[in-house]
Image (cartoon, rainbow, N blue to C red; front, side, top):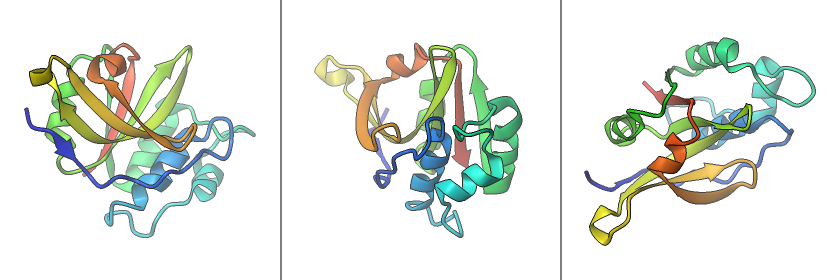
Length: 155
C-alpha cells in the first residue's frame, strides 16, 4: 500500500458545540474545486442543523447533505473495511469521517494516509479536527475502535 497525500485543508474550528460536521464541510470545500460555490459553516447550520448546538441527526440529515453536496456516504458498523475504503477513495477525494465518541458522533476531515509498517509502525491517518482546528494523526486501528463510522467522499 502506498502513502496517499491530498491537499492539506485549512483549519476550521466549529462555531457551535455540535457543528463539527459543518466545519468539516467548509474546510473541505476550500481545497476541492468540485464544491462550487465554497461552503460556509453558518449557512450549513441554518440549512441542516437542529437546535441551538448546530448538531444533526445523522440517519436523517447525512443523506440530505450528501445529495446537496454530491457526496457518496457509507456507514461502517464495525470499522472492518475502513482501511480498504481509504486506500480506494482517498486518492480522488478527501474523506469526511464521523467517529463515535461516547454516545455521540464527531466529524473530522481525512487528508493523508501513511504506510509506516516497514518501520514497525502501522498505517496512520492524518486529519483536520474542527474541535481545535488542528491537524492530528492516529492509527487506522484508533479509527476502527471508534466505530460505527460514517464516511463521505466526493463522487
